[in-house]
Length: 102
Ligand SMILES: [Zn+2]
Image: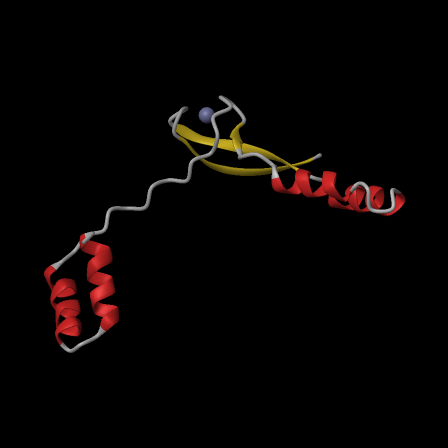
């Protein structure tokens, strides 16, 4: 199996760490699939579908993407979208619903 790596913040370590995930060797699976007349294809599909998460190389914790920054609503943003809603715009209402959680 090949290993894919990326560097990101590990919440468990509290530091930037290397994360690794095993990836299937697609050329080898293709060869086995051809040689076996297609019988290897389910194995290949399972290997591709269940790769598992990236894990911290130091502590083994699965990778969790960082939370997006909190949305800061200012008055001009709200007034702009309220004006859109008053003019009958559905997109303005959708934006306000999404931001205000109602
Ligand atoms: Zn870690």
